[in-house]
Image 1 (cartoon, rainbow, N blue to C red):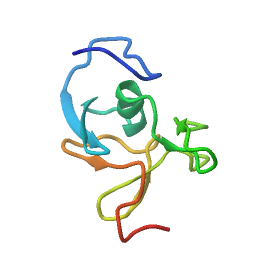
Image 2 (cartoon, rainbow, N blue to C red):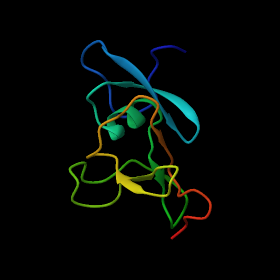
Image 3 (tube, helix red, strand yellow):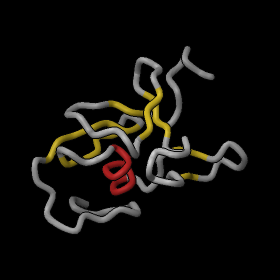
Image 4 (tube, rainbow, N blue to C red):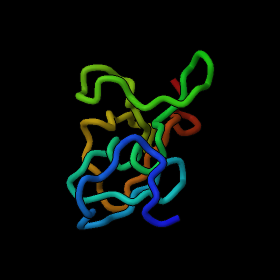
Length: 102
């Protein structure tokens, strides 16, 4: 359903300068200038999964001090979603791409 949010972040104003990023292969609406974590949590409600029980995780500190919001780019580079601004067409994943596992 358009405009429906499944996540924990809700926009407080109309999203302008809309762009699209891709999270785990799914098109995800984003706003130019916002962080990756804001766009992903607004639409998906999770960033990754717990290594202990597989439960969805959404980040911890949200200010770059931990590494709980780590996402991977297609080239295997890891980013902190809370400190990285979205870019049009950006592709991020909750797990490292094949061949880049740690």
